[in-house]
Length: 361
Ligand SMILES: Nc1ncnc2c1ncn2[C@@H]1O[C@H](COP(=O)(O)OP(=O)(O)OP(=O)(O)O)[C@@H](O)[C@H]1O
Ligand SMILES: [Mg+2]
Image (cartoon, rainbow, N blue to C red; front, top):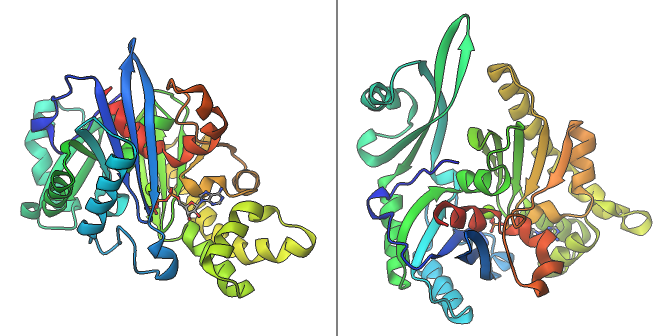
């Protein structure tokens, strides 16, 4: 298991054994309060706050792809969560959205860690699409590969605008928390859903406004892509196509999904083109990964709220021809008995937040 943190300097303040994992998505804020009990991670409490404003005005989202967070909104939602959940933990690990970070896999000759550290800044200049003075860089070894008789080290290089990190620190401080670590959500998903498993896995995280498409193996992220189609596009398409309001469209989507027959058949025909865009992109990412890495994607894990769209799992399986399962990020956690019926859904919706908590627990 690996850790990658942009706030390493303050990463060791967990004396109580409790941690709050916080995932600020485009349409919701999710938090999990996790304790260590007899060496195991135990989910004490969780909260999901949806920002329903985004239903009425598409622009009113908590995060936007233009890298602007509506800070005030985020602080308000965090304070509300704290109050409603009676959160006592001050220590937070939070995720950065995929679109705010730039990740790339680079290969270097099989040199020592120190040599990599010495050359990474120079290498980064070739790849990072922003001036290096404005970004915080981090990297980790994610494997080795033999090519034409030579051994190469594979390094995942991640860069995040320093301004973004500062902004997150401010948001959590204003809401009364200590931000102990920050990581890109793709890494949290890999930790929560793949762990140390050596099966080459594609994770498709269908959120509200965007879908993350990742490839991971042995706990290491190998490829990370994103497409701006996700759950909210399905809702909007239904609303327009059936001339119903967005709330009704959202309800219908969750109820029938892609499984509509007879009178409900229209529902699926409206949504399929959007789902197909996501699948097409996933297949493109898979082909690229398989060609580059001479490896095969052996399974797909669907996560994020959109993974619960009825019929999606079967459709992805039929279109990709790969074993497809829903994320079960809660499988390694203890939790109260009365949460059991919610586990299938929470295992997808909370995958990022749970992965964050596992970083520290
Ligand atoms: N049972 C369900 N069936 C279909 N869609 C669902 C279901 N439950 C949630 N969703 C959809 O999942 C989406 C929200 O997913 P999620 O909570 O992962 O998004 P987010 O993390 O806030 O957004 P993003 O990852 O884009 O920033 C919404 O579009 C919602 O309609
Ligand atoms: Mg998300």
